Length: 312
Image (tube, rainbow, N blue to C red; front, top):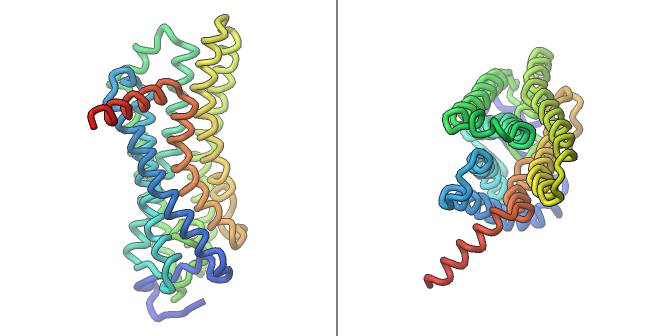
């Protein structure tokens, strides 16, 4: 570990995969390809959801928020990863690390709650169809999304601020690809058991509770779908819900394995691969999951592309 005089260094050295240099070029190429794909896919989802009148429903309003969130999420970490993987200087300023810490965790916390909100929307649509327009009206949807974003912001500001106050005793090397709360806690010196406990408790409310609510809502949805007499109705309900469930497991699986254990017990390479998964893979796959498994979105995209090509 490199030592410097200040408790809070001017910059951090992100070690990443310096012990395996042969991994850096393939990762650089993968990120260079997937990042534009993630941006274009999520922009396409936002555009079709906002421009087509057929998609002016709560489900697509929440999907638009998810796409915007994923764009911010992946942008907060991928450009810095590309710079570090593509050069010998693998540093990030202390201010840059703090900004990345706030944005990355605000987006992550918001996505945890937004996915739970999207499952509630599906529950009301399938299990309470007659009351759907009353329960999920525009004002309620805007209020719920505002609460979700505010909660994610509160989580990030409180947890990241407490983490940044931990003494580093001059250590300025992070064995990671980015600035993340568990890795900073693990790197810090002195007594940090309170920080570990606080992170675990907060993450139970941000990860475990929303996931339990999602699973409970899908148990009810499954029972309701089985009662639908029309095979076409069952197929449509299953198609809509399965897309959301795939996204849920892609996001929650790695996040739970990373955040619902004490930072001191995290293995050396676990944070790197988990960050790549829920920070890069999931935002890239989400648009394709929703378009490939959703006939409405797919149809609107085809029509939009047809109009664009026709006008040319």
